[in-house]
Amino acid sequence: MKKIILLIAPILILSKISFSSNINLQNTIDGKLFLDSLFSHQDDAALLADEIQNLQIDLSYYLKNPLTLNAYLSYFGSLEYRYSFHSVPERLSFYSLPIFLDTKAKMLEYLAVEDFLSAKISFAKRHIEEALFVYQLKRQDQQVAEMAMFLSKISFLSKEEKAAFFNNSISIRAYQHADNELMLVKSLFWQANLLYEDKQYKAAEELLLRRILMKVFHLGDSKLEMEAYYQLGKNYFKMSKKTEALWFFLQSRELALKLHNKESELKNLLMIAKLKVKGGNLSLALSDLKSAENIIVTYPEYVNYDLDLSRQFSELYRILGAKDQSQIYSLRFSQLRKEYMN
Image 1 (cartoon, helix red, strand yellow):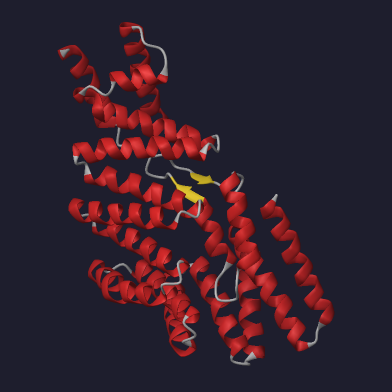
Image 2: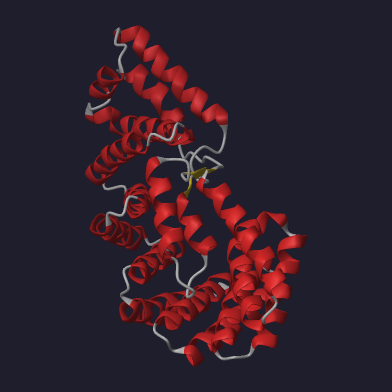
């Protein structure tokens, strides 16, 4: 047994895994339903690209080095040979021994990652739930928070609103216990997004103003401050508080310019253009949309935002009476939508 412990120790030290990949879920059944609902019900107060980003689950802090996974797999194989167990259930039962609980949790995470890569979302969810339970038993707050955040996002994608809120509340408490302020702020941002999607705009406003911004100011993180202003702008847009919305979008854009953050500049330009159209400032809105288009042309990685840009151009040119240009952008939006749905 001592030899086994000595064998496990270095592996567990290596096991702060990181998987530098975004798992895109848009080709899953839930993802298809999400996109269909999104395109059917999207209003002019939000960006399609913002919502499409919810189809990605970031696993960037999971497998930093493939050798880590190889070490685990080799270790699993050696135990299988030594103790003559072969199936996954047999392995999980073996790792349920107290001394192996950490190893069991990591194995469950690996299984979940494999499920994600195979688009087996229901299986991934089950494995993450099991890993979360182990981490709760072990009182490992950081891991509890990470697993709960995954479950919240999967629940959101599956339109299980209560489960999304419940799991994110676990994540928030765990990050508080772990004294991880940066990740706590990110969980709070996600909570604000859930409130926004649930049309609880007043609650989202209070969370952003009273908790998130205060913590962001304390951290001195200009990027998070920029994102908080942007989310407040969207929230006020939904509340039909156009003056407040414009002010926060302008503040967010100003920070984006200082930080040379082209994606945030693009997002704010698109929202500011919507406000200007509503205010009848059509020429200014057109100028903002052209600036946004220049960013997308220069930075093809932001092509997601072309969905919203094309839709806005089509509507604005229709209002201006430029039917040919309106039709061009309408066709472009339809083609982009078709690509995402397929």
